[in-house]
Length: 70
Image 1 (cartoon, rainbow, N blue to C red):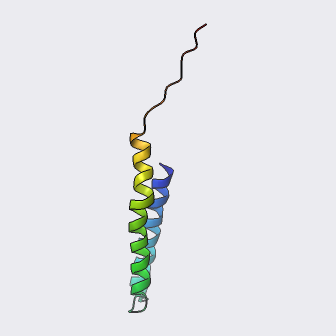
Image 2: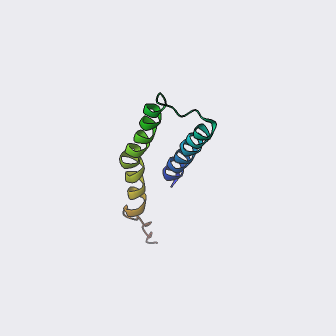
């Protein structure tokens, strides 16, 4: 679950930084490609890293300890 929390935190930080940049007036034609690259990278990272990590955690076979015979 740590990978998903880190991934979510990165999304929140990027959205917050983009919102602050927008309200401070720093968004212009030069920053659109940079912001697009960052959001595109986060979207691809979701499919390549975060989703497989979550699926592995949720659907991996459970192991149980073997009972020792005395």
